[in-house]
Amino acid sequence: MSEQISEPTSEQSLEERHKLYCELIDKLLRCPNGQEPEVLEAHLELIDAGLIQTMLQVATGFAHQGNQDGAKFLIHVTKELSKQLGFYPEIPNSTEEGKE
View 1 (cartoon, rainbow, N blue to C red):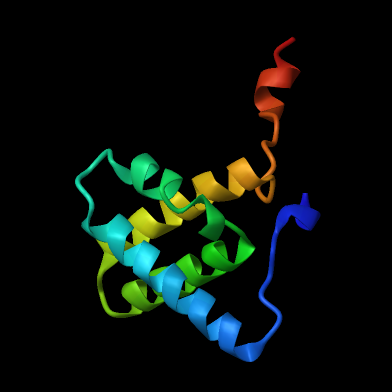
View 2 (view 1 turned 180 degrees about the vertical axis):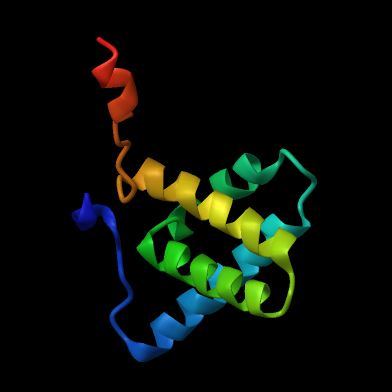
């Protein structure tokens, strides 16, 4: 799965990509509730490990600034994206298995 992630090579393109990540995060924060999937679909080229890392950094900043709602929202979106990209594996519930 990691071979699908395209990482920029030059320092300038890293900065440009980080700026695009921040713009996408801002769009997610401002979009009407429930429209996050459409916002993400319009920016599929930015959905990668770098976006997830940037979202977690922003969420951490929000938490330190007292913006718990913003932090929780970004962590939730990050978790969902991580699952879709295969970075967050589904772990079977061991209590369910023990009941069989």
